[in-house]
Length: 396
Image 1: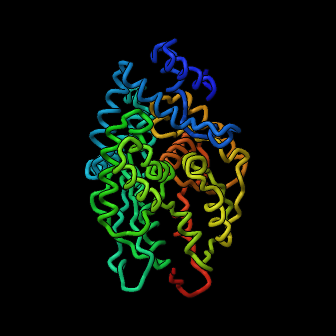
Image 2 (image 1 turned 45 degrees about the vertical axis):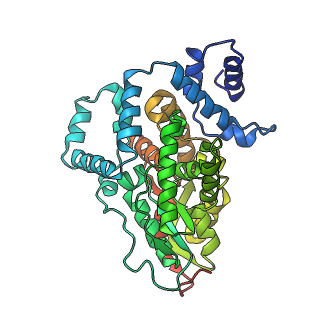
Image 3 (image 1 turned 90 degrees about the vertical axis):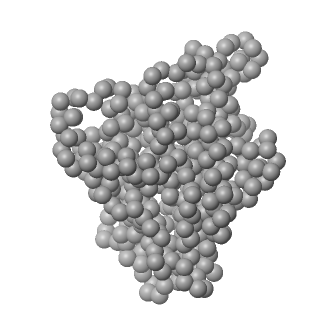
């Protein structure tokens, strides 16, 4: 019953009134990663993602969640993710926790409750926490530069992985894009959708769409596979609201992953790096939901000195899956272990990712396993490389 067909059979049984959406129904759907690998491999084209979202809503309405889930839902979905300032404060607290040595003490004395350990170990190293907030460059808007783009900063990304957004800003600036600020943006709502909080997701979607259209940008650049998938799927949130649906369709058509943008607008620009062996860990929602597979690899192959070694199972999930690694830590750890074995087999010195959840998950796993491997976002590796072909290419 943990297979896609098994879960579909359970949902059908609920729809036909043969079983209640409790007990094993909830257990089997809670175990689903939502990686959407089944969608892209299904010969019948079954849209399992829509069924999964429906099941989450039904499950949320029918059950009484445990105390940990109640806390995570209230704290993360309602009090933290939608508010960038609060996420900044949480990141500052994480930096204090790291720098003060409290983290070492807490771990040695096993002071963290078992239920909270999966969350604590995802805290990145201080180099990521200490970086300054990414800002739009002072010269980001000179006359004649195009296209006009805005950057979707994300909630977890901008708070805990600041160098990723900073690197994205620098690369866009170097390519000649006019980078516009987008005040008022908030969480994409992906976690809310995955956990059945549809109305909360709609509220965040409206706020993001209003912020984007106010900015005057032509494209919304994302550097997080999960966020990008959620933003592109906003029309699904408003199918029963004609006006909102049309706005969401227009908005979704303007969302572009940073790798898509760079491939289209880099012209003849390529980069150069000291010789290094790299492997690429696909984000499930970038690969399966957005269909962005070749672009990151094309960019990696455009960096001279980079030897790209493919994973044996590039489409396999790392176990992050939104908040899955917190809600289902044992299964997530087993999945992560397989991913780490695949990474180790490549002999790579650097693992390149394209989603904050994946990056934090693989970072934590590699650190725990004692692996001598660096985990970077795609844009971080490009930013650390030297642009070649001399001139700065304006985009058209």
